Image 1 (tube, rainbow, N blue to C red):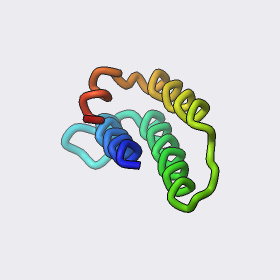
Image 2: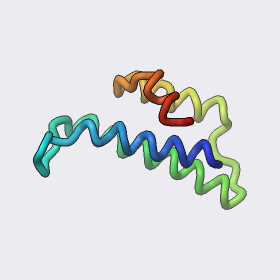
Image 3: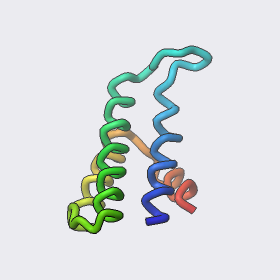
Length: 84
């Protein structure tokens, strides 16, 4: 569960890259929406685990996350550093 918490934190940090520098808006609203949906799915998986509900199998969950990372252009090395 600690890894999922780290993943959620990392996703919020990457999502900050969609903000307008020095402003209140979004420079990349489509990416922010995609990050938000991914955060929602990861948090949902964690909630189901906490509640003892069988969520997506780990292989499918990890595949979905990996596909979203690729689509969002998340740097794998940066992600690994944030998960430590």
